[in-house]
Length: 161
Image (cartoon, rainbow, N blue to C red; front, side, top):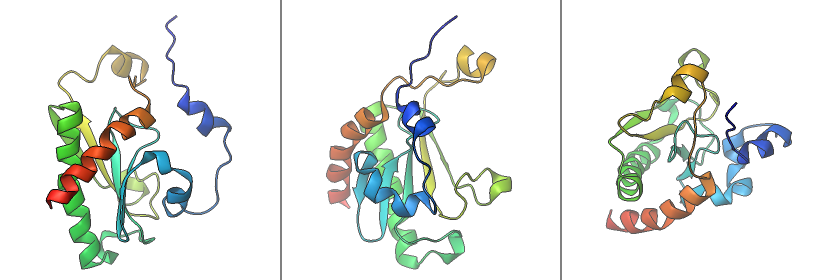
């Protein structure tokens, strides 16, 4: 039997599950995963990623629907989408990206009450036998290390805007 080591999962498994919206409270509890933050939007690593480098762009304001975003929120989200792609390309050299928004439970939204955009770097062949046969993903780097590598790139690229 093979062993997969994912020590960061135990914090989630044993940890207290907060009441209310995780994204509204996250800037207090998840500082090591925040890559960029301003008064309108923040960018953070997904603590339980689909693949390495999976991040999310999240409005500060608690809003669940895309049509309820302000014009400023929409602009900043798309500006940070471009910055996210530049930073991920620089740090991780992915072959492509999945960029998506899940609106409503039927669409796969895990946190449907707070709008957010997923940015997921992808590599040729990143689906291997573990994903196909065992329905398990192997994340080769701790999320906090990936965040530490990406944070200076957000400062670099966001200044260019």
